[in-house]
Image 1 (cartoon, rainbow, N blue to C red):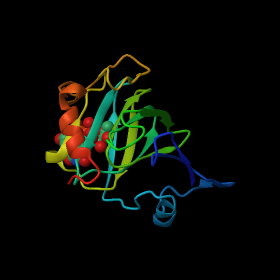
Image 2: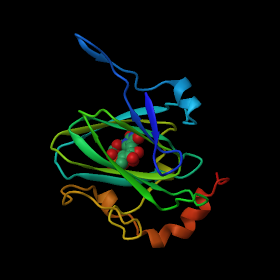
Image 3: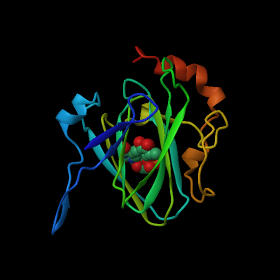
Image 4: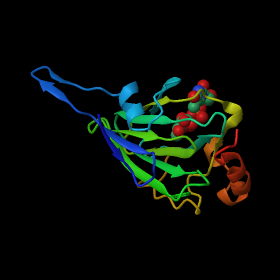
Length: 190
Ligand SMILES: Cc1cn([C@H]2C[C@H](O)[C@@H](COP(=O)(O)OP(=O)(O)O[C@H]3O[C@@H](C)C(=O)[C@@H](O)[C@H]3O)O2)c(=O)[nH]c1=O
């Protein structure tokens, strides 16, 4: 695996190192030791798949508050997405900055999302599947989100949004939750 750190400290783009032969290739997609060596949390508590019927679908921007703050290792196994993360660590030099990358079934790249980041994506094709491994358990009572088009985040979505869940549409503006978020996301919270 090739670990490429993004401009958001601790968030990594992971590329495959392919062992190619006449059958095709073999590549590792997760390794406890390599993750730990690069400072990534080497734990998979849950692994999930999401199927998206329509191009333009947006899911996000989601996170869990401590003590259920979760890492995510996101990849796209069918179709293509633009994956986006936002740094919500109040003590971070890049607080509120975002990073976006295209993950596709063809490029097989994965994005490692640290704890205390918001995460979301938009599908670029019909019938797109994402799979992601979480470093902590799903915790509905600590799950929260920010509206995908909140001006404070300044996210640019490549396509006109086509499908968004009622839950994601209903998330409050960042300005309304920032005080609470800073308190609950501070390094020693939880
Ligand atoms: C995320 C999740 C959902 N669910 C259930 C709750 C609900 O009935 C149904 C759909 O849930 P949601 O609408 O929250 O699914 P979705 O909008 O796909 O949520 C996901 O979005 C992306 C962007 C992420 O970053 C993920 O961590 C996760 O928050 O699945 C679980 O049982 N376990 C889980 O881990």
